[in-house]
Amino acid sequence: MSTPGSDTEVVGTTTVDLDHPVDLLQSLRPLVASRHDPTIRVRPDALARAAHTPEGPGTLVAERRPDVGTSRPDVGTPRAERFAVRAYGPGGRWLLDRAPGLLGGRDDRTGFTPGLHRAVARAVHRRPGLRLIATGSVVDVLVATIIAQRVTSLEAARSWTRLVRRLGRPAPGPHGLTLPPHPRELTRTPVATFHELGIERARARRITAACAAVDHLDAALLGLAGTARLAALTAVEGVGPWTAAHLVRVGAGDADAVEVGDHNVKHLVTWNLAGRPRGSDEAMLALLAPFAGHRGRVVRLLASAGPWPPRFAHRHALTPVERL
Image (tube, rainbow, N blue to C red; front, side):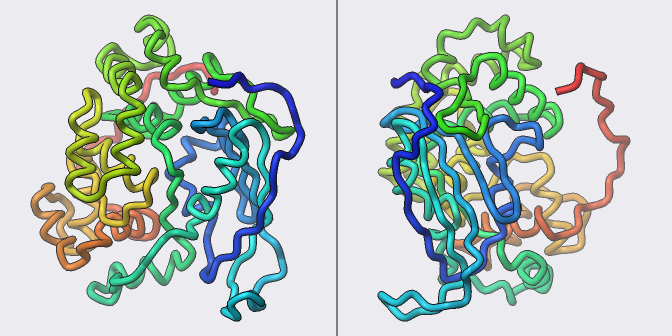
C-alpha cells in the first residue's frame, strides 16, 4: 500500500456529463458521517473525497459546471449536469475512472414506478435529484458502516471522526482532507484503542474480523450480484444483513438492497406505505415488494423526504463527551 504524501499535483482530469440532475448533498449523504467528517466535503455544487484504491490513496474533486442545458455534440442528447473532475495521488486515476458512479451517473431507474404509492411519488417530487451512488469499493465504506451498527447516528459519527483523526493520514491534494485508516492497518489495532474512541469490544472485534477479509469483500461486491453477493458478504464475520445491504447499495449502487434488521427503517417504511407507526422486517418487505428491483431506492427516498413515524418513547440520552 502506498503512503500518502503532501503532493498537490493534479494527476488527471475528466468531465462527467449526466443526462439527469443530481443533488450532491442528498446523493452523497451515505458517505458523510457528519459535518465534522474529515474524509469528505460536500457542497451543493462541489465535492472532495479522500479514499483508498487498489493503486494507492487518492483524492477526487468534482465541481459543477454552470454550462448546463446544452447538448453533447458526440451523441446529441440533452445534458442536465456537467462536472469538472480532477484527482490527486497514486490512486487518482482509479478514482477518475469511477467518478461517474460517485456522482450518480451509473444510477439506472429503469423499471422504477414511483406512482405505485403516493408517498413514494411525493418523495420523488421532493427529491428529484437524489441518485444512488457507487464508490466501486467497500474499503472506505466498511469500517464506518460497522461503527454505525446498533448505535445512534451521533455516536457513530463521533467514533468515526475520532478514529480518522487518531489513525488517519493526510490525503493527497491541497484540500486538507484526511485518509481514513486502511482496513489492513486496523487489523493490527488493539481493542483498547477502539475503546478509547467510543467503540466497545464487540464492534471492535467485528471491525478487525471484517477488515481482515476486505479483499474477499471487494471481490464479492464487484464479481457477484443479488442474493449470491449478499451471501458472500454475510459469510464474513462482522458483516450481517444490515451491513451487507449498506455496502452493496453504496459500493455497487444496488437499488434493491434493503437494510433488514435496522431498528428504524422498518418503522419508516410501514409508516409511509401503510400508515402504521410500528412494523416488522417481514411487513416492510411485503410493502416494498411492488418496487422489486428498487426497494433500496424507495428506502433512501423515504428516509430523505418522507415523514418519520411518531416516537412512543423518550429519546436516548447520550452521555456528554468532548467536542469533535
